[in-house]
Image (cartoon, rainbow, N blue to C red):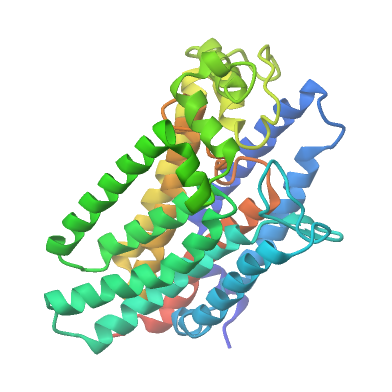
Length: 388
């Protein structure tokens, strides 16, 4: 039995410091966002509660070592699939439609819970297990074994991808990015990866063409919602849609641009931007703290990704390395997409800024992922003499 001192020595204090700084940034930015008087809700208090729940999730997840995580990964994957599938047929009292999307369960006492946020974590665990088992069964690599692994990974990610695509395009893109990130680290030969990425790029270009010229086909055969088309159109020409779907983007550009280098200071907001405490929280940072403050926030994510990358490279357990690759891909895409959409570089997809934006499900899912990262340092001491 480990003593309390031994348990404390196995905690990743560097990661705690990074998350603590993000927590402070989140509370400060959300406080500024809610001063517009648009809502009567204290979102700062709710975000503190969300973080408290996230800490509980971390304390639970941290105790699972690699063998235990591998053993429960398929069960978690199955649970996530069931929750996503039931959303399709669930009555509105259980799964309400919000902003044209049916992506949440209404839980008494907890509010709205989005299962796709947890499915992302379940998926990266399952993909990590698939890669570990595949390499154990196929120690000698070949084109055939690499192709088989590629098919396995695609099949595992394909089902939740299709289910989430019916609910939320942004989250579907996150799942796709997790798949791509883990394929990069899977050891699959580039002779298979390059044609795959070429095909994916051509497919994306084809979809973009269809959005512009034949949206009715995507709506009919892929179930893409009309409001999702509006996001593309308003991204390409936001000022032509300023009174409708381009309103958030034009206001975000004005807010960030007006912050200039140093920003206007805490509480000195002048640009009205509704719902800014969620997906457009970066606009608040840009207006009040300017380029300097925005750069500091982005640097926190660089530190987070660097920290996880360092763990992935130093761990002796392949499962942990694959798991870290999935988490890095998930966090990186979230940040890239969220910041990109607030400055007009990418279409608006409703993806929050991890650990900063207000939101229960998103924060809990991300804290679950951080619990997995904490578990590496907490448990790997037991495996320090492992052969791999």
